[in-house]
Amino acid sequence: MNKHKEKIMDWNAFNPLAALAGGALIGLASLLLLLMLGRIAGISGILGGLLRRPDTDTPWRLAFLIGLPLGALAAAQLLGGFIPRLVTDTPGLIVAGLLVGYGTRLGAGCTSGHGICGLARLSPRSLAAVVIFMASAMATVFVTRHLIGG
Image: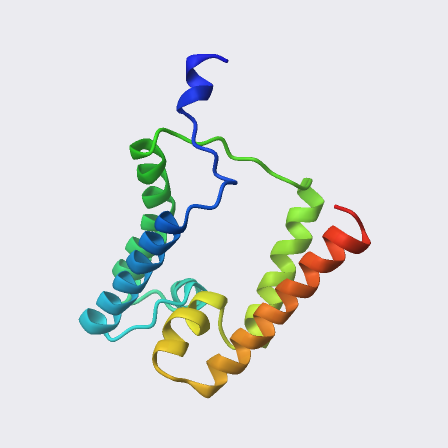
């Protein structure tokens, strides 16, 4: 095995400490955004607000959206790198993106907005949305792994 491959983390392996740290950081970032700007850390709302009406909210929205991939790149560099792996083709990614966009619009928010911020505020609407997200995800995994055999 070459030296480069030895440095690459197995991103498929579950690590509960990494999951806990990641969840804590997401929660902290959401809390800071709420306390400092009074805003909810829902990606669809942040991006939608940027696309609808560039105004005084534009700088923080851009910083938030640019920080997402930059944060992932920084983490990858700190942790020894990563190799992105797509499990579907381009048309599959396009269809998935459109479905996520449609679901976000239909659910009046995205998983991050409802799951992280909405549940923390004890929103009944967010609880209903998260239950539906999770049930849909479980059904999708069951169908793709056990019925289709993916």
